[in-house]
Image (cartoon, rainbow, N blue to C red; front, side, top):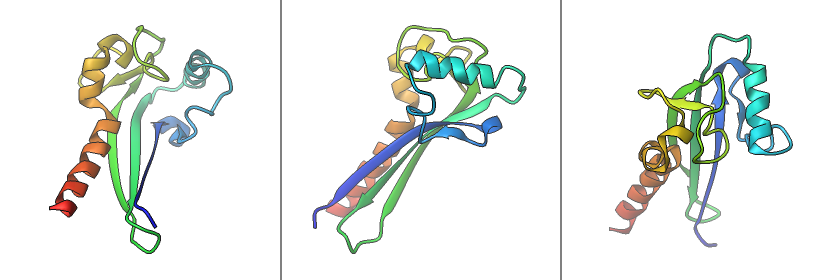
Length: 133
């Protein structure tokens, strides 16, 4: 009977039919480095390296209520090599549109300003604030 807020995020790679998607952390067993290496290998002969990080948040007031969805995306491309030291997951291979460096090279301040999670949570917070007022 209580309100619930849930989210999931993933990396969608166009040439792979938007995989790994919500299975990004489980797509390949092992470490982030293992997953990055596997993705780079899959794309080694593919020209279309477009991708996007996507977060979807669902808010449900109660079991009988209609769900509300909030979506944040950051479009970009997959680099040909891993580069950079900050962040986690696919940050060393993802170059956001409008930039020439990976998230791992750009650093957390830039990543947080572009963040797909921040976009989705900002939308959810705005919605909840309007409901409360």
